[in-house]
Length: 232
Image 1 (tube, rainbow, N blue to C red):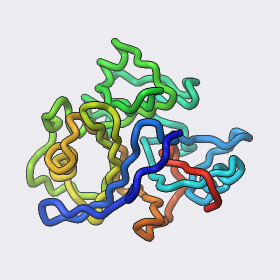
Image 2 (cartoon, helix red, strand yellow):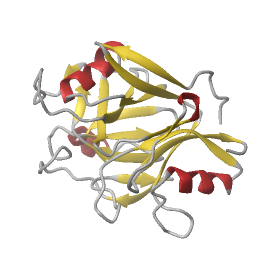
Image 3 (tube, rainbow, N blue to C red):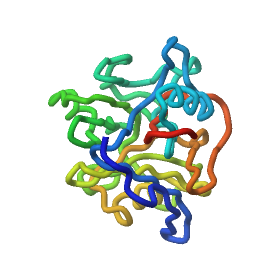
Image 4 (cartoon, rainbow, N blue to C red):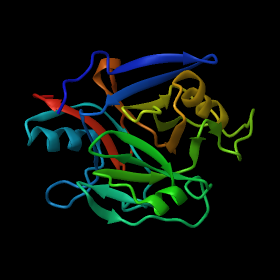
C-alpha cells in the first residue's frame, strides 16, 4: 500500500457550518469492515482497533459507512475482499436509503467511485469493497432532485464523495445538524466531487485522532477505515 499523505483529517468551514473531512488516496489501505475473523459484527471503533491490531495495523480514521438492520446487517449491497455479503437493492423504498436515486461507494484496485444504483447494476464494476446507501447527495454535479433548500429536517450527517479522476475519496461528517441540501453542497461546491453518497444521520460517528475524535454510541453496521502499519 502507498504511503499516507500528511494531514489526513482536517476541519472545514463552509457556509457558516463546521465539518470534519478525512481523505484517502488510491493505493492506500482503505477498507470496509463488517465482521471480525470469527464472524461477529465489529460494530465499534474499539473492536475495529483490536481487529487491525491483530494484523499489526491501526486505523488512521474510521466512520460508519452505510445503513443497517437492527442486527447490523447491511440494508443494501456490501462487498468485502471481493465477496458479496449482502445483495444490491434496486427498488425504491421507505426512509433515506429508499430515496432514489441512491448509490454505491466502491473501492477498486485502481481507486474509488460513487455510482448510482441503476448504473451500478448495469455496469457491474469490479469492487474489492463496496457499500450501498442513500440517497445520492451529488449526481454528476447536480444535487439530488428531492432535496429542499432551507429544509427544517436537520441532523448530524456523514457521507463520501469521490474526485472526478477517482483517486481521492473524501469522508465528511457535520459538526452540528444540517439538512440534506446544505450537506450535499459541501461535496459539490467545497470539495468539488461530481458524485457523493449519504451514509447516515443521527448515528453518524467519526474516529480521527488528528481531530481528537473518538465518538461513542450504539454499535454500527458497516465501517470504513483507513489503516496503516503500527500500534494504535
